[in-house]
Amino acid sequence: MIQSRTHTCNDLRMEHVGEKVTLVGWYDNMRKVSKNLGFLILRDYYGTTQFVVETEEMMDSLSGVNNESTLQITGVVRERSSKNHNLPTGDIEVVPESIEVLGKCIYNELPFEINRSKEADEATRLKYRYLDLRNPEVKKNIILRSKIVAELRAAMIGHDFLEITTPILTCSSPEGARDYLVPSRNHPGKFYALPQAPQQFKQLLMTSGFDRYFQIAPCFRDEDARADRSPGEFYQLDMEMAFASQEDVFAVIEDVLPPVFARYGIYKTASKAPFTRISYLDAMETYGSDKPDLRIDLKLQNVTDVMKDCGFGPFDGDVRIEAVKVDNFSATRKVIDKVCADVEMTTANKAYWFKLDENGEITGGIAKFLQERKDAVISALDLKPGDFVGLTSGKRLDALKTAGVLRKLLGNIAEGHMKKDCYEFCWIVDFPMYEIGEESGELEFCHNPFSMPQGGMKSLLEKDPLDILAYQYDLVVNGVELSSGAVRNHDPEIMVKAFQLVGLGEEDVKAKFPAMYNAFCYGAPPHAGIAPGVDRMVMLIAGEESIREIIPFPMNKTAQDVMMGAPAEVEEKQLRDVHIRIDIPSEE
Image (tube, rainbow, N blue to C red; front, side, top):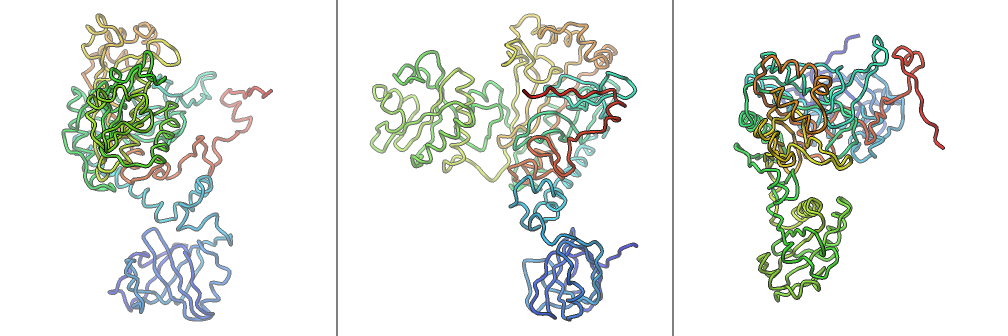
């Protein structure tokens, strides 16, 4: 049977009065006035329409029909006597002549009220996601996502980029996260990996003679969830440009993204080109973060010289002391204590504070330890009565990162220190090529191992590895890292040397990246790229706090699809087909 409708539930207006129409949709609710009068709301993808049931026979036909059943209703449009100006269809109503149940909801009670599904706990929402998505407030984010992706695609094509899809089944590659492995049936003991990113393939496309590539690329990483990161899979606007520099990439992104944010975002203004550029080192020293929220005007100050060894234990010895000054801050002690507690919860490090009162005296917090240095402290921080100073201490990076969290928290609550109605973009540039790994204690790549070192081979041969910078850049908006990118290392000799510094020889490079290494030996163009995260982008544009609100069928925080029951056990035969035996150690 083919269902037909003359209009959607958002179409009918005054000009349709007197017409006979057929609508289909979900039985949203019924307000019964008497046994022969009721007001039925029908809801479809497009909106809602009110039907007025005026006969006992018609009311009886709905007896036993539960909310969320799908209906086909034919009737005549008339003007409403009591209009609802909040609805597009609020000037009219339909008097039904026939009602047919197309799909029956067999449950008298739903897991949650559809229009209030966002109030339900997340586990229930994810288990019944198909019901959650019926809520127009939830559905609008998925519609928004579709529009944004379409706009991004059109913009990239408008910049002469060619959309090319790359493989999903590939080989394992060290991209910085755990791979999802897929066993091979035809090649016992060997595995495919789902791509953490199309990194190697897009670089190979550049060596293949394509000039500008992009795709809305699915990426797979076995990593833990965060509010702004979905576990398992995500999508990114992946792009690469041949014969291109960092400036070429910046020019494209600065032209493509701001109009999308300004058009669809909860804030209607976005940074225009050129975006602010900040070196990684300056970002850490000034903002305590490599993803600073530039809407906040607060900055860090190094006060080690004036406060060190003042008698306050955490400020004694070989430590770095950072300050965040807030002008005329009138928060209560309760608010200040909450900020300090939140800093400790986020960083596992403590924050300290003091104020300069209206009489010019240092008071509160650690004030008693600073009395002998009062004048020097006031001068160093250029304090005025009413100013508040938050403080952190520890090893350099710990002190800076803790101060960065403190800055963000204070900026969010201090009046006049944050622009809240815009999207503020910036580039973080000049990342270190190498770092000492926290777990290994050995030299490791700081970010992408395929980045070109600044200075090329000369810097690899002559500089301390920790002093080498990379042509690597991050795109940040409102304190959220939207993307990482780089000018790629397209020279096989430089590539081999770069990997030698982290303990991998030429044979290791050839073994781990055979296609890329060999392709570069056939003459590779200089190339550069970037890949802004689509999920994170939509989350920012929609103003949502959780990335799961903008994904049609998200996993939960532990990477489970509770709706489909994944991951799940499989039959023994399936395991034998791919030469796998399960051996889970028993818990003792």
